[in-house]
Amino acid sequence: MNIYRDKKVFITGHTGFKGTWLTLMLQELGAQISGYSLAPNTSPNHFDLLKSPIATELGDICDPGKLKNAVAQAQPEIIFHLAAQPLVRASYSDPLNTYQTNIIGTLHLLEAAKSCSSVKAVVLITTDKVYENKENGQAYSETDELGGYDMYSSSKACCEILISSYRNSFLNIDEYGKKHHLLIASARAGNVIGGGDWNPDRLLPDIATAASKHQPVHIRSPRSVRPWQHVLDCQYGYLLLGAQLLNGKKEFSQPFNFSPDAAEVKDVEAIAAIAKKNWEDIDIAFGEVAENYHEAGLLMLDSGKATKLLGWKPVWNTENAVEKTIEWYKAFYKKDMVMSEAQVKEYLTSINAR
Image (cartoon, rainbow, N blue to C red):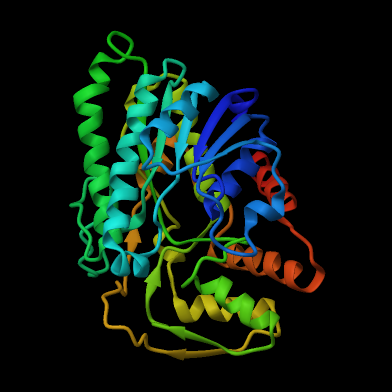
């Protein structure tokens, strides 16, 4: 991943949970980073805690002029697009904003990238929820049918269709190096966990916050199964994919899943049990969600393509991912310590030791 040293990188959504961790990882790799995002929407938040020195512009990806100007000013070689409305329940209460942000915002980003001659690669982050999930135990691969029951999932499936159409229409890989010099790819990652996330309806942040107050936490849907993974594992996948695009490998201009192995997939109750094992103050009560809206009970991805073509495999298994997440929150609440930089260094050391 030395390709990122001194590279100009532009990140949308850099003030968000995943964006802050990607920024920190790229800083450790020596990149020159510019960020474009809304202000953080929680207090506390990871962005403010890190006090990152990168060039930051606060703005909405639904403001095409401001976004285009920010990209042009930064003159990046690669863009990681993470800005989104990322919450399922919020998509029920505000479907219009969800669709505008996730779909039209992505189109604005693609237009800005295409208009900036310095941009050679764009990695667009969607989600594991883009598939037509039949909850039949199938691990979905990149060629499976797209869909989405709820508005968030369907908006991200629409993003995948948009990305494919935009590539075919304007950035056809058969014309790469002749009519254009830009490669784009999408990345679909499962349930991402890690320190510094205070968004609502997040399992481990809710558990940790309650533990810090010596209060019980009520957890819904204990039997729901998800592909839990640490945020640094999916960021590692994004960076490997981006590196291939920067190297002009047009065969990587396609979607990739990033998810734990099928044997690592666990339900909510098992994740909560691992958390409790790592923090004695955690007190959990299980119950079913009261709101009348759909939430998938089972979701699994097949990451075989990422393993075969990118050489990507999770560095931390699911139990390690939960341990590292609880370690982060425990240090924050009990010692007023932010462990993010130390965990990034530990993670990169683990990669190098493989």
